[in-house]
Amino acid sequence: MAESCPILIASDLSDASEVAVTRAMQLAARRGCPLTALHVIQEEPLWWVIKSRDLDPDDLRAELLREALAGLQSQLKDAAEELAIEPPESDVQARLGKPAAVTSEMAMSMEASLIVVGAHGRHAVRDWFIGTTAEKVVRAGNVPVLVARVEPTHSYQKVVVAVDFSESSRAALTAALAWAPRAQFTLVHAYETWFETYLDVGTYERLREEEEETLRDRLREFAHEVGVSSDHEPDYRIIAGHPGTAVVDAAVNAHADLTVCGTQGETGLRHLLLGSVAQHILRESKGDVLTVRAGGTTG
Image (cartoon, rainbow, N blue to C red; front, side):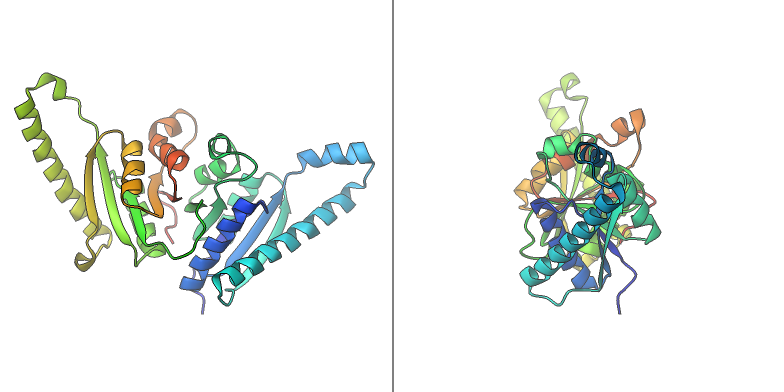
């Protein structure tokens, strides 16, 4: 019996989206979650084809939708074969419209617990991130978004979670425990110092050690409040420096295959101020990234 944790895959039918499909199927099979694969066709470019080739719009739309459904079915079949598993309950959907908007609307309507997207598509990661579909999906709605980069040869084994003690990082850790319960966790809190230039070296080092010890105790207490068991203690890392850089570096050092962070999901100036750490992690991480918004579902 599938638990109530529907997973939505946003696939552009590229090679990169195959990684997302396989990872989503792996997660769905482990938890018994129903799986929906979605491809969204943007209508705007179709009009150039229609005008230049004198095609019937309805016929063209119907054909593209049929091809999309067939492509999604093929991706699901290939993923099940690659994982050598019986495919979980699954569905395929093709829609016309704006990919980010349609994906977010479907995720809300099906009460999805997770959206999975590929990190690469027609553009490199840095180009992909600026204003394109995946970024908009991450920023929209309350559903956690998993950006899959690495071929899923195994379940997540080493997970780094960014913690700033906010509600969004609480939601991030909760989601990480739900989707990777057997992984080895590293919890990272980064802080930026401002007083070292005004103090002698000895005083600065003493204050830094005291601050880090206080933060480590707080981080341990935070983890236990969220649900980390005392017999499965994470590695607690307190790092001086820019939070985004500290988390990415910690993930590299831990050989993490998943980095998890909270995001405020804001737009405009407030988004730039509150979401810069998540943006940096999404841009620079080598492995998969799970973003979770405070107040949303956590899986």
